[in-house]
Length: 584
Image (cartoon, rainbow, N blue to C red):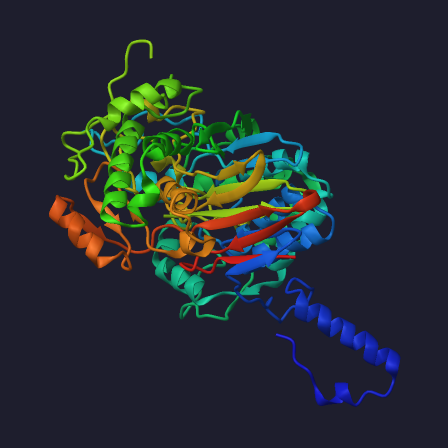
């Protein structure tokens, strides 16, 4: 933090006094201003930002601030997104990453929709039954923790694909992340709790003790310094994507795999490619919704859920009333049953997306809905097709020109596989658990899968990440997304309905209690603050209610279009975490 000494106010030389004041003010208003090596970067959490030029909302205030500084320097939304993502890899190690993957959905000022897939892929040595023992029993301990749990990381490849739409030199975009890794930053109380909770796992699964282990435990305000990560980021700055997928960093990854009996190889890294895909776009009333296609399940089931409620009188039902929660829960049940049966990587499996999202099919699915009785997942499975037929992070960016970027990126579980690459300083993902290890066997989020999501070399595992944009009359109106495993798509669904149908404020849509149903297990999950009277009515209707911890950490930017191309931006960070909004 900035402090003022008495001698400052007694200075007699005007020039020195002026220069000193400028320096102090710069340090005060810019937390990323270079400080001495012993001073952690200071910051504060800001939950809402009402601005007129550009805004960023992410899981950490330092990341949001860094993105906004790039906007101030003349960068566009893509520049800011790259910086935000790289800073999250430093300041939010539980989910921010360079050892994982993700999806970007964007809409440019020129009207182009972009969907970028940098989801991890299975290594070449992966096999369908690699997590089954000799008796055919699933070894989810191997798919969820340790070296064998990691898919080929896609984040850095994705960032360099994003760079094609950016304006500023990459060296400028990555430098804030390097500085934070090199000099350190003060961790929050929640970060300290997360690191302390995982200390035992860090010791168990790492062959080289990482910077995240601290004798005596972490506490709020401690400085986390990551020298190895700073050097890795420096190689990426100087060598581009090859600074990660080849050379020294690739060597360190492969050596880590060899020490831990993993299967990821130098060839796996060298051959990885991010893919630009056609964005999923569908109408909802007067709006256009843009989201991510497969291997994100969100592009299918979000569309299903929105279409199944579109013709219902949601506004008259009211927010979190018995009627609205009952309807939305049954819609979620139907969509997640289809997810388990039919969804996977379309590059490997023929998924009948057009049929699953058709009005005729969805009308048949809704025929099972009973307005006065809870459904039963034993009786309600995936729909019949005709022969023709929790840990992640999200951030949003909108710039002064009207470009909008929505990115969800992940290691899968908190701190991924718990493995830090020795000498490179970053966590590897545990995304292999997002495949169907065995038909009908749930993954760490309780989701089940089938043949469509079976393991195969080079295949992308099915994801719940659902970065989403909403256009109104062709202009960006909402930028939305959240972490949360299988709760991601239901949280996005509820946030959209809350704003578009119930007319909730942005802040209420983000922070009011959420609920979730995913077909199996057959339980309606609610947050602690969920209305007790609605909970009681749902129980009487036949629902099994399970109270759980927080559901997601939703980030939203709402855009109000003005005259002459101007706009007002409202950015809201979720109160469930350290999420922070920033802008100018």
